[in-house]
Image (tube, rainbow over all chains, first blue to last red; front, side, top):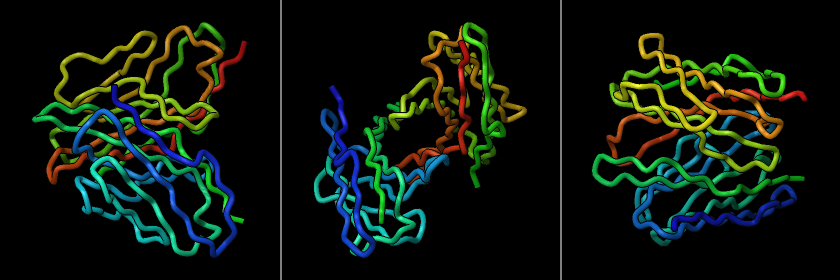
Length: 115
Length: 117
């Protein structure tokens, strides 16, 4: 079966510290991968998406970066966290086989608090 | 540009009653899909229902149905026989066409539903 793993579940980091959030997918090949951020009480904002290994597209300019070192691994990073980076981060994947769209599956999320 | 609008920040409904959550969208793509997700306090995003732009009939999934009015560009979620466990944040979302090899999912701001006993 297809599953998505995201960790850690919660994280408290000081301002200026680095960040690394990891997302891995099982049971599928060549997925499209996405990182979303949700500010408290708000909708989800797409940060990055990837259609293949090493292929990253950024949706909004920010203090974060993303990498896809393997087909089913997606990493969100920062060299120096800002207070404004606090939020709930969700990883998601989707697959399109021909014209059939599989839908989106989300990970369980990481709640990041920058202090 | 694509846009999703949810005009109800909060809604409440009596248990066992039906409730409609509004969603309007804007897109120039002829092919698109509309989603509804539920987000309980735990934060996970739970897929509820999907409507394709070319689907002739409104989508239904158990107690959830989608009132799709293409000309009005609306895709309202109807929850019948509300349960206490339905209390959560609900998001409407839209994907565009498959051009470029990806499908971005654009979210509305959400509606917080409270079900009262």
